[in-house]
Amino acid sequence: MTAPLRFAAIGLEHFHIYGQAKNMLAVGAEFAGWWTEGNPRTLDGFEQWFPDAPRVQDRKALLEDKSIDLILIAAIPAQRAAFAIEAMEHGKDVMVDKPGCTSLEQLNDIKACVESTGRIWSIDFSERFEVASVTKAAELVQAGAIGKVINTVGLGPHRLNRDTRPEWFFDRSQYGGILCDIASHQVDQFLYFTGATDATVSMASVGNYANPDDPGLQDFGELALRAEGAHGYIRVDWYTPDALPTWGDGRLTLLGTEGTIELRKYVDIARSDTPDHLYLVNGSRCEYIDCRDAGYPYFSNLVNDIHHRTETAMPQSHCFKVMELALQAQALAEQHRVGRGA
Image (cartoon, rainbow, N blue to C red; front, side, top):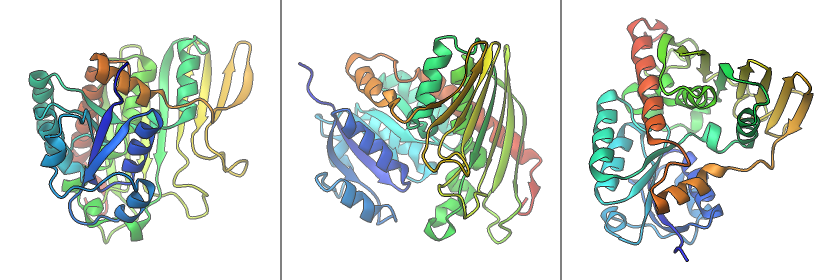
C-alpha cells in the first residue's frame, strides 16, 4: 500500500494557497507544515483553515525533510521561480500558483532544473483545475460532443479589491503584468481544449484606464492566439462591478466543428448566484447542465504522477508552453502599451 503523499507550503502571499492546500487534503495528502516570510494578509485565515499544520521558521526544515514529497508555492510571483528551483534541487516536486514565473529567463532556468532533477513543476491553473464546469466541458469535448474545437474565447474579469491588496500587487516587476498573470489561465484553456502543442501570439495589448494613481498596475489586457487549425481570443481585466455577487464573471466559449459549449463559471448574471453553469448546443442537444458535482481531477492525478512519475495531471511540456506564450504576449503588449501609466 502506498503511503499518503506529504506536502508543505512555502509562501502565502496569494489567497490561491487556500485552494491548493484544501484540494490536496481532499485527495488524502498530509499537510506537513508551512513557511512564509513576514505576516501576509492571508495569514490569519490560513491558520484558521489549517490549524493542524505547523509553521516553521526556516523553510530549509521543510526542504530537507525527506518525508515531504510536494511543495506548494504561492509567494510573490517574481519570487516563485527561485523557490521552485530550490525545492526541486532538494528532490521535491512542486505545485506553483499562477503565474509560475514572471520572465522568460526564469522559465528557462526552471526548464533546466526540471531537466537536471527529473522533478515535476506544475502550475495550479485554478480557473481550469478548480472549476467543476471546466471538468464537465473536458468530458464532453473528449466524448466528441462538439467535434474538433477550433476556437476559444476566454474572459477573465476580476474585482480589484483595492483595500485588501498588498504593495506588490501594484508593482509590475513583482506580479509580471496582467497577461503573464491572469491570462495564463486562458492560455492554458486554449491549448488544452484545442489540443495545440504550440501557438503564435498574433495580437496583444495592455493598458491602465481606470487607475491613474497606480502606474504599475495594468487593469486591462487582451491577446489572440493562432495555432494549426485553431484560434483563440482572451480578455482579462480588473473591472468587476461592486454589484456582482462574486469576484468575476469568468466565461469560456468553445466553438467546435459540430457544436458549441459556453461556461459561466462563477455566476449566471441575474439568474443564479451559484457557480458552474454549462450550455451545450450540437446537432441533437440544446441544453443547460449544472456542473457543480463534476469534481477536480487535477489533484488526484497529480498525486498519481508524483508516485508513478507520469503526466496525467498535465504534461510538463504543456505547463512550459502556457507560460512561454503568456510571457511572449506580455512582452508584445508592452511594446505598444496604451492607456494611462504607459
